[in-house]
Image (cartoon, rainbow over all chains, first blue to last red; front, top):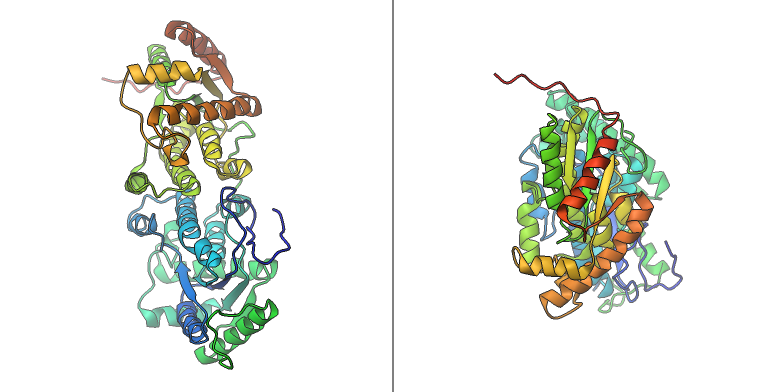
Length: 247
Length: 233
């Protein structure tokens, strides 16, 4: 990977999409990661509103939202034809489509791209499904390197009541595809516990900005805003339509 | 973490995997069909598999092609998804069961085509790292003129993506096909050396080629122990 000193070229995690120009991307990519039920989506909505009030243009993105394969993934997950290889490859296709039609064009237009989950979720899910770690890293290496990654950290013990409150434990969130047994609760605890272990390892490797997700949602939002402000100031990024004094 | 099957090392399955590769119009499918008959006549039960679109992504690929919305990356990844599906369902089970699998196109097709479309050479190879190495891969080498005249005189009309129309190399299908497949031939040349494929001169007669193919298949199967046939009553 070539490291660029100019601030208007984005960087790939590893391998490039050589046919795409990297220059002229003034936007920022901010990622919020965390397991199911950690409050990610609520926090992303809060961040977006706050950024827009300040005049920053924001687009949000997330898994299975590509025009090309978003629906095909949802459909495939209704059946039983997904293998760990096809599972990971379909998600990679989803990301590639969003990268080329949504994320990179938005970065080129100077937007803040807010990603509700990113490659780390798939790296964790893949490793837990026993896919080769090196292969997963290579597969998703065409992803644009994020500028900021928040990790909303929560233990399984706090996760269980939240997921039950929100509805019920579902097949995929419980990792039932891995045949660890047919007990929904036991499988959920084992699966989510494994995911959290993977996230905790990556938190160090990729220098995630860890946030204790046991806190009150407003306290979490305050922390996220502080970190985003500090980051945007550090790189002199200002919104074209920013309202002076509104911070 | 599981160890991956790898293109770089022989697989450990009791079956045998034999592959044909080459551009459209190279005659590879004809040769595969004849090889299949040969093996059947020897009392073996070969399985044959093509790189057809699996139900999993068939609709997606079709719609993407129609709308011309596929990019080099999504084109590559959709085909990789298809390949993985085919590997898991049609190739690995018979290989594990000790059968002979005859595959019409394998990862080398992607190595050539996706790189020409603009994907990174090393990335494409790594994406397909999960594929077991074939016991023998025949590459049917044909000059572009021969391939074009075979295709135009024969079957179906050229298709847009097969002709690389998405690359904007030429305004019409035939010229684009010629340029695109010509580049793929160049890429195959490198792959033959890199992965030690068996090159067959596909300008020879069908019979001459088949004779070479059969001799080489016999060599590949020297250490093969056939699964006892089921007695049909």
